[in-house]
Length: 92
Image (cartoon, rainbow, N blue to C red):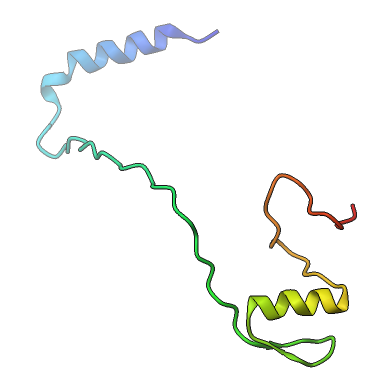
């Protein structure tokens, strides 16, 4: 249970000394209205070219990367999958 007497003592002291407080340096809070974010599509930037460690081919686009992964039956590991369901073919 909270000690409400402590709040009463503090409030009483505040009211008693209210006229002694220097209010000149106190800034009032300014309320700012924040606009809600608009929903829109996110455009992913193109990947930079890199050399595949599997067959030493140069991969310079996401399309080439997808094709490369399908060709060699591999996939990236990391945080590139987002969603609520596990994609088909992903084992646990």
